[in-house]
Image (cartoon, rainbow, N blue to C red; front, side, top):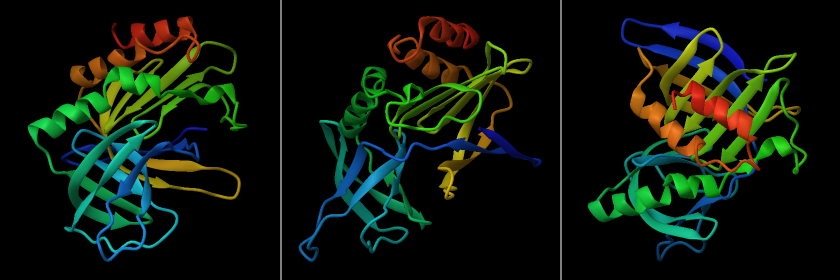
Length: 244
């Protein structure tokens, strides 16, 4: 199940570390543009993405990317494609952090690529267990749109929703009974795979107060979720707790 690992307070910020279940397959990929010296292109899975950059995961093959070098390729998501140019910000543990080289036309294309309608169209209801995914205890609904959106809805042992988390691009939005709404930013994400489970560890920077722009972003997506993916009573509950 989702675990609170630690709460780290400093004079400057509050960081919270947690573990969430991880779905092992992603359909958003980044295919590098091969140079004349390369025999084959490396295909990366997009682990998470925002309007300013993305984290890429590679499991097969070898790359020569180091911090500061340029990277060019095509971002692909089930039929949609966009050419991306950027710079490697970091390389670690089988992942690459990439920032985008931005322009007005590129930003317009990315906003369309990551629009609410496009995100919702790619949601997979993992709680329906069509792919034999084992759900953690008390996780009632689990929705995922590859590296863009993930929603966890937890219930009490008896009945009723106890809390939910929304991970949307680099943002974190949470409601918990007795605590209310909180927002934050995803600082780091890494695999914690074991022989018995697939998990990701996240470190969040918790905002001093719940930020309305992040709440509004979550509302924009939740309102559009198909009731076949999330029952209307659960969707209405999330909308209500998000202040909509």
